[in-house]
Length: 505
Image (cartoon, rainbow, N blue to C red; front, side, top):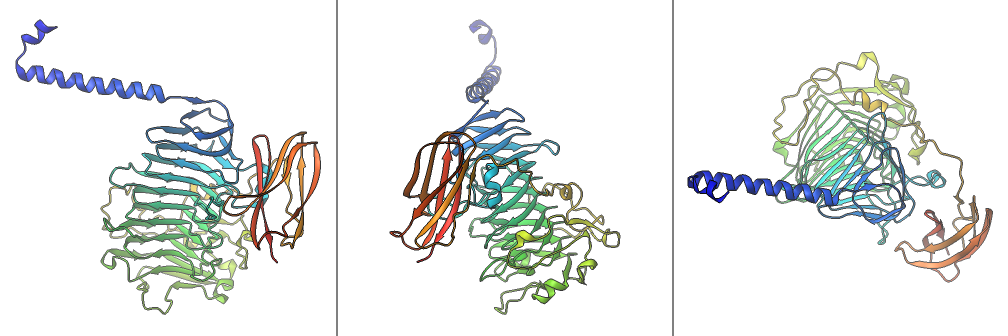
């Protein structure tokens, strides 16, 4: 080998040396991948985790899981992830892939006995300075539980250094019920496409909340019954503007549950740029609000469709918001379209709104396909868009609002299996100073029933013993406690259930 190299000129030796170095790097990367490759065959899962799950498998997460820097977690099509701890969450510092398919989605949910309690039964997905974040064809239920500070998690919360992060992809997913924001992105380049969000943001979270210089595309999403705004764009970043192309979304009945500051179909606020075209707004408390704190020279919007039913008109639903503070610059545009009237006059194939204090009673069987007379209203706007995160093209004159497969992604009820492990709501609730808690066990086993405050601190252990199958009742005496909200948690083996009770003295 040395004799061979001696016959080469310096440039040839340098070239061969470079090739050898590249080959060594490739070998090292491949070896690192081998070392970190792991098939995750079974649970329960908790703590640090990496590797690839087995398709069509159910995994129980008994506590929080963590994807460390440099590691990757691949969850396969058809998997069901059961979040069995009320304080459980997913913390991502490495690479994160939840990639189902349209015919075989991934499901993240809670034990069947918790489903009826709605949002807040587990935490959320927190991705902080992660490497890659990709979530496709995943259905997420009952997120938004509190952390140990008492603050509700976002369902999906991605914070990133946009200079180093590859694009955040969140497409073709369903988020059904959450307490705070459904999707929050701070920094990074992103695509949020063809998702469905319903009953999210109670009492005052937003559905899609983009901040801190994030840049990307929000398109073909359906959002209804949002507590706050369906789509919110603003920035606290001093390094670049938040910059978003928002097109062909359907935003229905948002903003009604927030106490204090109202919510909107789309809110564009401080430090933000946006191009807003071909969206449908219907029966939101306020449809569009663009404030003077935005980068006003780079705000472009037109050809949006607005409608309100008689019910929402009676409750002062407005198309272009003006709260009287003098900071709203939203104005009607030449190609905007409007419709008001009875519910039967809505542009959708089936639409039956219900306006009250609880939007979870809103009819979930609505069909958001446009009827014939409202199709073909879209147009190709004069885009000034130059952001590399923009992944698609506007649909020309094809339509307004969300299209095609997005509609079919709207779930009706997530089918529950018969309850085998149940924790009943305490009675009375609120209570002072005693209340009764009932639980049901399908099998004999070790059981704990504990009461926590909202900081996650143990207040009292009510049960810690082997219990027989069947119904059990226990009394809780809170006479030594202060007024407030408390959590009570039933656990047996890998499964746990949490519920809330309110003490009022």
